[in-house]
Length: 275
Length: 295
Image 1 (cartoon, rainbow over the protein chains, first blue to last red):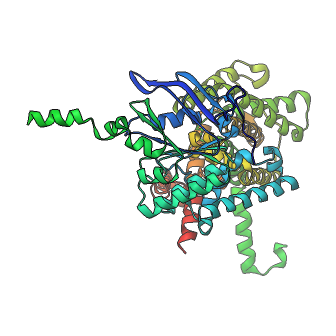
Image 2 (image 1 turned 180 degrees about the horizontal axis):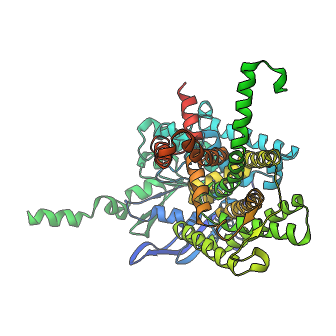
């Protein structure tokens, strides 16, 4: 069993990821506003909220695509809020995107190999010179990439151009590519967006299997059923702010969450009186 | 040997020899232009449009020629020195240019060409100034071909190595590449250094081919030639740069031979046709893969 960092004063396992009063503004708009949250190692955490709540911005802040204006982001006990994205990836955070972003002109296997670059195990010089150890390492990485494709059930598509695959398959390629970095934390940004029920269920089973391998997952999702079935804890945001956190059932039933998604009952009553 | 062969094939062979004699200089220029095109491709393959190859070529050409002239250095030794000088300069250029947005970088590289010309004119002790300088460095076609084969091998190794995967990722989407642990800046710096080395080498080879260089030798005309060569040949594979340079060099010669009165029109028509029907160039790996997949 993996050892877990423990806070010596409270004897509670330290979170793998901890955000403290993180904020990000775009001009006058507070996309993320003083948000604090934590993700425990080995869990599958959900991040929910209406459109425009700041979920993707938060994922961008964690992954280093954007720097926060203030606050701290701690990953495995190291502050990463000022680190560039490629350093954060090397430290063990990988992500997928709300709109699939695969590399044009690359086959499925090449996409995943690109994900394995950071764990290639040899220098660029050795690879360029074609040294025996570099060739051996390349073969090993290629085999690992094929294993990842097997996990997402796309081995038979390994040599197809990724852009010729169906939308659902492209999503799975993106997940396999992210897994190539051998992350400790995987950020999934709406992995089932645009998918039918069967495809969504497949993604859910994949996420569940990833947790079994010791991976921590933070999943941005609108699919309530998926969140209920596979998430241990959910954090809900609205207008860039933290709203509530807890089990999926607790959050779904919370009046503030329902108001965020469906509007307040006082609004409905006011509209009724106007008629 | 020709005398031993019967009359009809003898005529054909004679024609071939005459053809070769007439056009071997075109082949030599195509090879040298390939180096300049490869230099441009090196940075384009990492997502950067830069015309700084002209500057690297100028440095390689003038420095190499001065070393051969002034110190009697063997031309074989002048070649790697020119390449190293180009690589060193390109590293310094990368430190500045990689802080710029892509369109500003292209503009800055054009400005670099103008600055280069001013420096060349005002350093006559190295470059001969406005007058220029002769370059006593004959280069055989077989030697040029060998160098090109070596360059092609280097680019092939780069494309199949981890650098190739990283460069393609950075070119397609630098932000996503970063999220996979690929440092776009590091890869693009390497691309600049490769471009500088190949550009410097191309510059001294051009000097040896022309036997005389001046400030006008390394100017905007070369920038246009190398960009057109890369784009027409295909900017998604290293062989596209070589094919494009060959086509771009041979096209005016063929047009002059076939359509002497309409040479310029013929050039334009062929270039337009390639741009319209093959927008990704003559060598397009993506199209090749799609065709294979459809079989």
